[in-house]
Image (cartoon, one colour):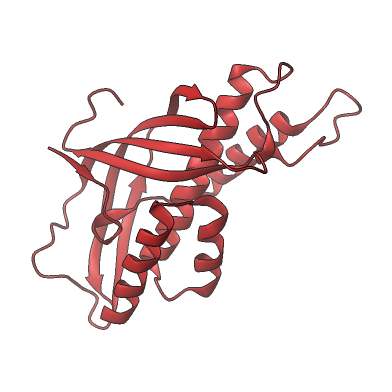
Length: 193
């Protein structure tokens, strides 16, 4: 069954230090020039010029996708976090940005949060066309929606881990930064991811 990803259900990301370090290394390498190895531009602003290889561009897009997932997951875990709310606009753009903010405001109002773990699998870029790119991944989602005051699962939610084939649209901003603009998932299937 294909459905639009709902933030209230589960936006996933694990703040894994090893993964963060890998993303920083990949993005730093993508942003370095041959002139002494100093960054020539912010890593997330690599464009599609003739000197940028497809592998470098894909690495930047996947890195930004991972950062967007981490920002969303931080808000899933604590929808009242002002720092995470500020970061959201660095990695997520419309139409998903307004939707996400509405969902997280509702979670904060209702005292809900996620606990558990998540694995993003092996995200990869399947297409880049102009300022849009598609990223797919097979996510193993072990996050569970709870009532923060009691620590108990929200009635009617399934606390069991799910496998989700995720297809995301990344949009390049005018400044060159790739941002998450839309995402869909196939719950229980990773076909095509």
